[in-house]
Amino acid sequence: MSPRDPIGVFDSGIGGLTVVRELVRQLPHERIIYFGDTARVPYGPKSPDTVRRYSNEIATWLVEQRVKVIVVACNTATAHALENLQRDFPLPVIGVVQPGARAAVCATRNHRIGVIGTLGTINSGAYDRAIHAISREADVVAQACPLFVPLVEEGWLDTEATRLIAREYLRPFTSDHVDTLVLGCTHYPLLKPMLAQVVGRDVRLIDSAEETAAETCRVLTERNLVAPPGSVGTHRFVASDAPDHFLRQGQRFLGAAIDEVEKVTLG
Image (cartoon, rainbow, N blue to C red; front, side, top):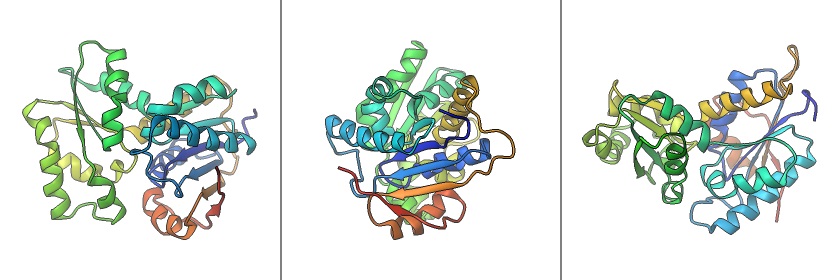
């Protein structure tokens, strides 16, 4: 592995581009290869064994592209496959759950932490386990918000309908006096301004995409793998299906133009 090698990032679809956006902001000289498994999205309803198989296939492909680190920008894949990937591949593998959990424990004042995510992520209990592994005092309140993903993909980021749904989903956090809320899905950072207004200024929002990028920066620095200043941060975007749809939707998540999306079929 060399500092000039790219960072590999993968997700079940396009949501992980919010992690790429943060990586570009925090590590502007890095090259990134992003793989969105759009042929097999969503991962949430699939069995853990299937998610592990898909994740292994994508990680193998990324290693063949000579990446220096793999970022699993998918909460479901992190929950079910991270441990296996870290064991089976000879390079750093970073998930989205642990950085968000660590930031939440550091941020909370009353030890009452909320987590929102897809049904698959919440049912996996991954955030509960990660938070309790850091702090036994933490009281975790988890809430699945399945309608948020289609609302984000429709571009309904701050409509009255989205606000009404958000108020309903987030009601338990108000009654339970949660002071820290983990956005446990890579789609949710696009809703962050609206969610902040719904939960109020006293609740700290933990952006898992932002924290995962910070963790990647830390790991690369520790291993002397940060790209040297002056390197050009060019990026590749790859989808396993429907690259045109990825191109149209992906620019909203990335916050920048995407020139081209390659198609690579796995499995």
